[in-house]
Figure: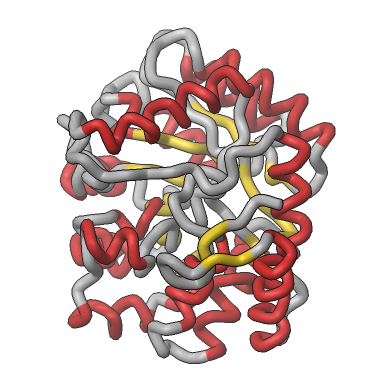
Length: 307
């Protein structure tokens, strides 16, 4: 039977043991399950290319960071793992890296949502002719969350082609999980400045900043403090892995605590180099209290998505 690491690097757990410990975490908090706003499901051939990208990290071409995929399973097994953990709702974070790809991914996502009722129907977009049309169609077909990946897409979020898209999504109130921080590798349009310009034009956007904006944590906390609909997800933050690469500044913890009603659990499952349990323990050991942790792991997501 496959073993995974445990709550900290180097500690081994059997899958059944990890499942039990994740469930016990929820019992300690008194919540019925987890709402994870940052999980990845996509067409298998696309996902395998994503895994190949992370496999390349140890080569030195991307900084020499080893990034083993802990849950390198087929789709049915990945779904079974999440459900075994007690994840009540999750997402299919999928994203294009070139024109002509987003609409195809959205078509796949419609079918995935139909056969996976506990997945929040996820869509995406790219700055290209026709983007306003297909984003509007995705909203009409029931998309409940969008994914924008400024780093992988290598596009400027202030691109004029996207301006009507931001306006459409702001008016519809559909959240967008956006990777716009500069981790793990900076891009031409990552960092807080481009997305701050978008928010200045569309202050009602329900942006969920992935990874708490790693590594520009404090800048993105500032955006959340300025705009009432900006939220942040916890994906990979405070784990032993991320603290070695981009540590969260201790001086900013009170600000994170104060935003407790707008911080959401994210994991990056299955593309994580440690067990799912470790993300939960990393949040717990912050010592921000059971009420904050309950809100992050369950209540905020339930309220945002009206579960």
